[in-house]
Amino acid sequence: MFKSFKEIEKYLISSNIKKKIALAGAHDDDALSAVVSAKRKGIITAVLIGDKEKIIKILVGMNESVEDYEIISCQGESECANLACELVHQKKADIPMKGLMQTSSFMRAILNKEKGLLLERALLSQATVLEHRKEERLMIISDCAVNINPSYEERVKIIKNAVQLANKLGNDKPKVAIVSALESVNPAINSTIEAAMLSKAAERGQIKGCIVDGPLALDNAVSADAAKHKGIVSPVAGQADILIMPDLCAGNIFTKSLTFFAELPSSGTLNGTISPVIMTSRSDKPENKYYSILTAILQAL
Image (cartoon, rainbow, N blue to C red):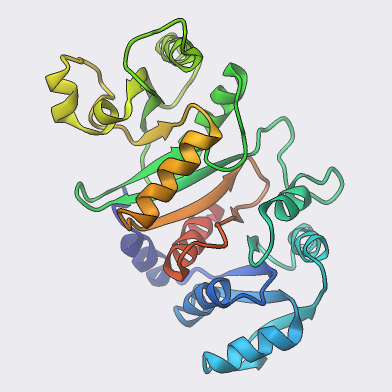
């Protein structure tokens, strides 16, 4: 089981694994910096899609050889995103990556019925892989960017996607916490009701490959001391591998708090697709974009 992004990096380098990334909106210093870092490690090649003049200028400023990259001149966010997905369909690239563009533009390309990347009967969901430095392990938080207020059925699919991601990280039986504002079922808080339903469904084998419990407040989901203090006896409390957020707003605020206040390393993923997809925020640091590349390559294996 991988415990850090450095461990993933070391594994990929030692395995001589190399994937081709199609960076849509490549005229961006931070996204291109992450791609350059991965290329220098010998784990990727890249096709860069966007404003060719700006891309070349950025590469030169990084002392990179322009000849080492395939550069495709393309104007407009939708055009760049669609081309990245098309290259994956044509097997001319392995992984599309979001560069300088709105999330909505990138998402439309992923969801396009003809040339998109959504798996049949799957639900597209986002997940953040977080490096919990204090406990020296990786955790997954979902969904923080795609599903606004998921239904019970959608939460089941979000869990499935997150469990598959955890499996790629080497966790064969992840512990899933369904997070809400408190650990008791309260009819006035719908997320607590659905959390209890999900927990019972997993107990009866309707959700497979993981251990699910909820509702759990954030403190007792991640802190064994908090769970013990509150008298919570659970196979998940205090040791959750996956945190399923009640809605997009909670997930988005929580993950960005961990990034901007706690400065914990993280990577962003899209799940439920025919190939790994790298989707990070435009405000993410270059190192987190690089960690997202590492995660996507691992997913592609």
